[in-house]
Length: 147
Image 1 (tube, rainbow, N blue to C red):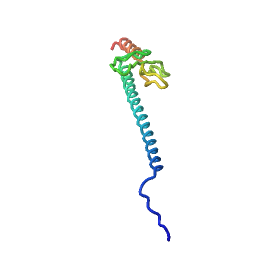
Image 2 (image 1 turned 90 degrees about the vertical axis):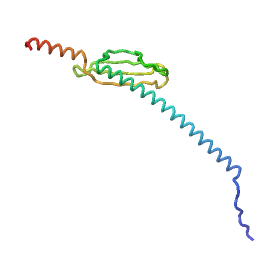
Image 3 (image 1 turned 120 degrees about the vertical axis):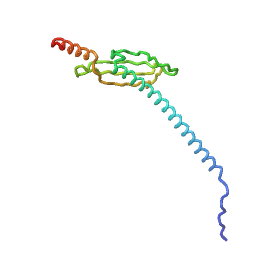
Image 4 (image 1 turned 90 degrees about the horizontal axis):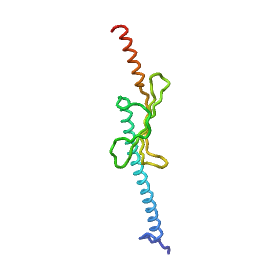
């Protein structure tokens, strides 16, 4: 007589413990991934704000509202309860005559650590003093010719 194996009707205790452990580890890993993703999203949001502020300062320089003089850590007049934004402007002559290399750096004065929150923007713009000299030369040439 041969005995046919009886089908199992339940899980063993070891199988239940292993499956609960796998579930726990999976949940812990997912929780860590959510935390890292949320932190990265917040940092990206703040870095976008820094970029917008830097572009705003640079646009003010390009349009002539603000002079391209070198300044360091000037507070921005933007009401923001979470961040204290400061900007710096570095302006130096380029290799081309009448062109300035202007760099605007906006950073959160309250941020610290290995990677502080800041954004750098650099553009070449026409030197306003060079434009004034050209206009003065044109005016003197016009007056000399009687136009």
